[in-house]
Amino acid sequence: GGNQTQTQFVLLGITDNPCLQVLLFELFLLIYIVCLVGNVGLMLLVWTVPSLHTPMYFFLAHFSFMDACYSTLISPRMLRDLLAEDRTISFAGCVAQFHGFAFFVTSECHLLASMAFDRHVAICKPLLYVRIISSRVCWQLVAWCYFIASLSALVFTACTFGGSFCGHNHIDHFFCDTTPVLRLVCSDTRLSQVLIFIFVSFNGLSTVGMILLSYSRILHAVLATSSAQSRSRAFNTCTSHLTVVSLFYGTLFYMYLQPASRHGSQDKVASILYTVVTPTLNPFIYSLRNKEVKGALLK
Image 1 (cartoon, rainbow, N blue to C red):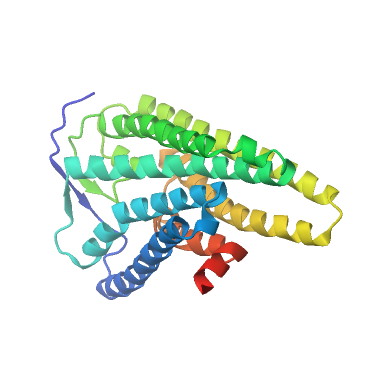
Image 2: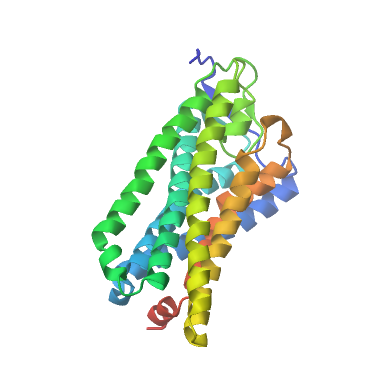
């Protein structure tokens, strides 16, 4: 730990070009509205339509909740900064934003693994499904996601903000993320970087491993079934899921598993992908491929 002489930071944002700022403001405002409508809409649909009271949609509703939350931690602030002259953020505000972001992103990693496990049981052991994935198990899995996420978020936040800030206070990013903040720390950050790397690797690789294992078993089971209809149904569910997984993890691994020195301006583009674009796409990728959701919407 160090002595924080910094009481506030300045977020440099995405661009300084005024025309581009207005354009991006309009674009991201639209995306954020679509994100909220899509995710909150899916949550309400799952809550209110009895035919969607199944484990798969239970997880989906939590997934939409996480998407809406972490998007809300970042987008409104980013939109404000695109038009505002003053882009300062308090030290506490910066810590809170990063902590919330780390919490929801980590819980999403583990929820994606739970969803893969749920699909694996549904497709590979359909007769035992109701017994294995009971509502108690659903709640336990979600509780585990939130528990491991709160633990990880504490570690990430302590590692990112625990050093001493004594130089300039300009964060070259549009939100308080670990790499741009660590650049401002003037004490030694090697231990912090190692810890962050370990926790990102653990959360990322353990959940990706679980997802790949589940899907390889699903693929095996699906290819073994004779009927073309059940094959296409299983593939449908899984391709939508895998699209989300690859978008999400691709950008996350790119961002957090490369050395701090290698980060450049393309980082902001990658960050926009998983903080703004993916949470907006998720509800549509999932629900528009599902007959049940389409059916519920048409009612």
